[in-house]
Image 1 (cartoon, rainbow, N blue to C red):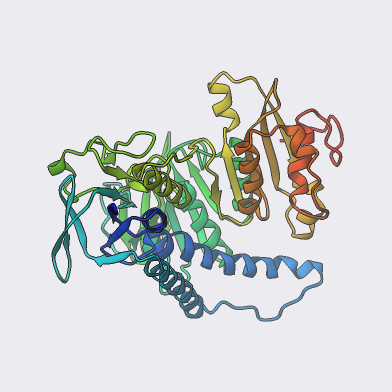
Image 2 (cartoon, rainbow, N blue to C red; image 1 turned 135 degrees about the vertical axis):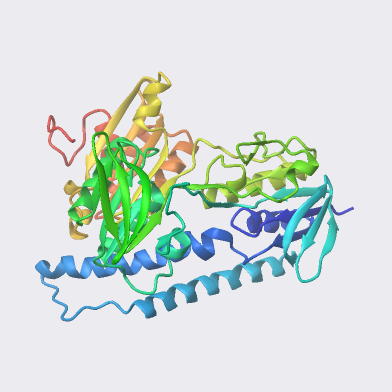
Amino acid sequence: MKKRIIIVGGGPGGYVAAIRAAQLGAEVHIIEKETLGGTCLNVGCIPTKALLHTAKLYHAVQEESHKGLHVDNISLDWPALMANKVTIVKRLVQGVKGLLKAHGVQIHNGRAILQDAHKIQVEGDKSVTLEADIIILASGSVPSKIPVPGATCNGVIDSTAALSLPKVPKSLVIIGGGVIGMEFASLYSSFGTKVTIVEMLPQILPMMDSQIAKRIREKLTEYKVDFMMEAGLKEILPTSEGLSAVVQTAHKSHEVAGEYILMATGRKANTNNMGLEKVGIQTERGKIVVNEYFATNIPHIYAIGDCNAQMMLAHAASAQGIAAVEYALGHRPFYNPKIIPSCIYTIPEAAGVGLTEKEASAQGIAYKIGLFPLMANGKSLIEGCESGLIKLIADKKSGEILGGHIFGPRATDLIAEVALAMNLEATVDELITTIHAHPTMSEGIAEAALAVSGNAIHWPPGVKII
């Protein structure tokens, strides 16, 4: 007899889980209160990258002027850019809908409220109650908010609103130096906006390797982005020209003007008003607690993606969805939480997977590092990036790759090679003996592997890399 599975949420965790469940022979129902594709597709990953793609081209054309490419009267058509973003999103949403229908998944529009371990009420145009053998919660996340005076002023925006501004702002204050903040800083500074970053910690992107984070900050500073580090937002004041953020540093209070203030202080699990308490599902500070197979404390109910807050990334949610479905239907899934790439779509890009040097040290692991600066890579120079860096972390004794971190063109694509190497428990020697095509960015990975033992071919011995 077919198992019936209900999935709450149609984002990258939910819809992928639905497709995998259908492939395994289940009767699948998916409940989505807004638009299929979730935050990532509609107001996150995809629209942000659509805008950043144009920003990268706009920036590159201007940078290439001293290399023989002269473009007169380059201009930005903001309404056309917004329209293109919408077109891409709509096409992908329709693609998700088509995939679900092709797999026989039944789609329900409305808000899901748990009634018990096997029942969900769907509140929408037509309220219905659905029953299931297995329930998978994939309700995603929402932006975190800082409760400071003035946070409700007109012009204080979150990442969703920042994707649909009526025009390019003259100035923007970004509260938060994480991934969202850095991507919007890169985007708007490329279009000429005066951007100021306010970050409470001494380092932007605290989860990234510190050397990579340092280079991102240096590059954004070149683009005229200002940084206020170890600074806390105390208040937001309306002014005649927009807004003013009152920021406190160690010894002084500052006022930073901005046409808009973007609250980029992260995201939190979206678990309110779902009936979790009624069913008795365990949560911790709003996050749904799960085991290694994403099962909650209530039998037959699972939670994947941002709502469990283990790793708030779209591809992690998809992988968790597949693992949860396979386990729930009696299979043996493989999910390795230690090998999940993180990508940042600044200009140029950054990416990392596995351990950072700080994490390896904290865990008492004896390790070696290999550094290769992309100023010594032909393809990187052709693409105008001299500040790029590839860093590998390897076990000192075995040479097994423990982590990799990249800053440079196509970093978000290149990181897949390091992730695959780690998944196969490859060593630096196996990366070295893999012949990499020339001229490519990927050669830098082999050079970083060689650098672990001090034998990089295209970097002089003894020359320090900062």
